[in-house]
Amino acid sequence: MIKKNSGLLIVADTSPLIAIAIMELFPVLDALFEKVYVPHAVVQECLQDLTKSKSIAIKQALQQNFIIEKAVRDTEYCQLLGEILDAGEAEAISLARELGAIVLIDEKAGRSMARRESLACIGSLHILIKAKQTGRIKSAAPLLNRLIEHGYYLDNSLIKLVLDTCNE
Image 1: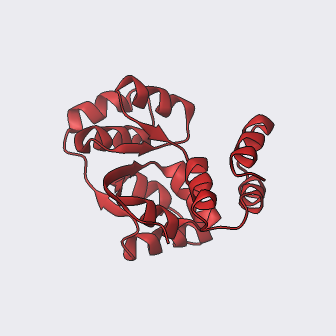
Image 2: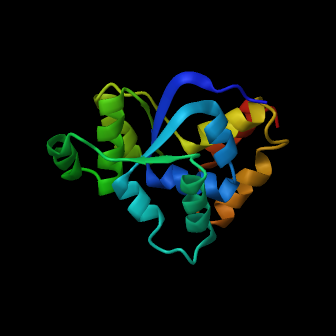
């Protein structure tokens, strides 16, 4: 059983939420963090097409409070970021900045901006590694394959790094 990190907050962007849905790791995300917030734009992006299983999984995660929708307060700052990033990334970084939270973001431009704002950021594969390290999954390889089957591009060196980190 993973023990929740008391006070550890995370704000998730769209792409990692979809990856977590594909890998079926919402219970792990819930166990690793005290609260997982999702800004409104990310919820809208994730729930655009409820005929997709990953959208249904994200909707269920919201209903089960694995993730919590939260509005951005600093809309001016968010609009500035929105000139460079997509709406979901801009809101995720803005909300993380407001809450002093970690940003769960996969896109290079978004991660770069989050770091410029002195925010800690992790990606969806970090959650996969933690799932393996804490014994919540037996193997990371099948979940990496599932991501690839769903169209995620993962560089071979990144796959190797994840598998090496997971002792696979």
